[in-house]
Image 1 (cartoon, rainbow, N blue to C red):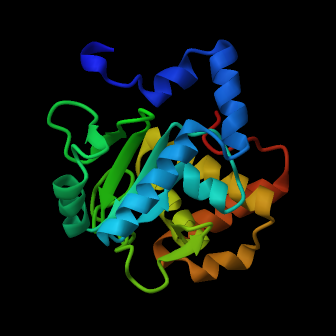
Image 2 (tube, rainbow, N blue to C red; image 1 turned 30 degrees about the horizontal axis):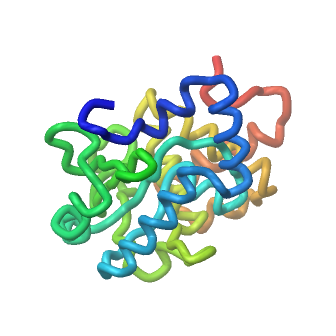
Length: 219
């Protein structure tokens, strides 16, 4: 690539053929370039004392629903993001594009790192009862295999709030359906979620168990 930059990780996955199949196989074995980038990121964030919690596809995998993903989604506070830019950009990480403030790449693997800040709103970005949490708050994240990940309940809340408010985020509703089916989640889990998304959870749970209704987001 120009300037000697590492090829992007998503370009590897999207080229298809044998390289993509090898990387996909490595991903499900926990030995992919993305996993290497994750381990590196966790070490650096811990060393700098930056609170964080994983979101997105990696959080799904940690909670028992592995699916191929091409980036690392992380929530930080605004102060944590500022420290990341000050301490780590140019030292193993670079902006993903000119002017990028929250999107970076691991310089070695080319894996994209998407950072959202606590207090932002999922989906359409408009104010709603569910917001991205402060990763340092009690009950927001748990540590699994050395990495901090949002709790299953918080992950489901965020995905329901996102998919219910933004048509381009229907994948988030499908993820909740897959979690319900794969983990045999109970209907009563709705009671532990934010009231604003309890009805959406119950509706998806009922559709998942009714059978023959297809996946969320399908026409």
